Image 1 (tube, helix red, strand yellow):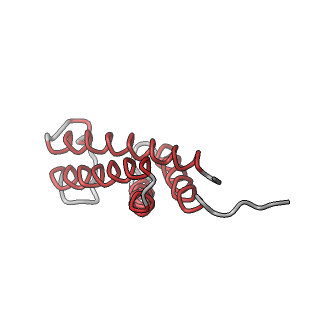
Image 2 (cartoon, helix red, strand yellow):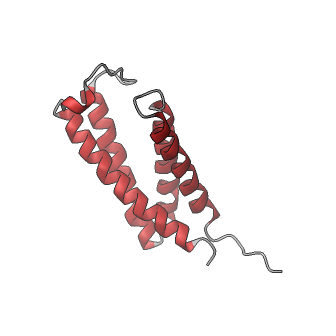
Length: 125
């Protein structure tokens, strides 16, 4: 089936990113020093950022596991989670690592495209 490799890659990336977001969320809830050196937050404080990251990470994990199972729910959640990841990367582009944020943005866009393209009919020559 066309695009099966991209969907497996998207599922793996959603699992990895979901796990990292949950870890960062717990770090933000604990007021970790990595977040604090003269940083401005879009959200009100680190506690809010932590809960948003934990919820986003859980959504990404459920999307990744559901994509592995081949469910339509996984495709929908994968597209939503990839889009939220792309928006999050664009919001952090003015930070200390703008090229990293731009790379994450393009990776999220590629993942969303791969999920959308999965199952489309192949062109026959």
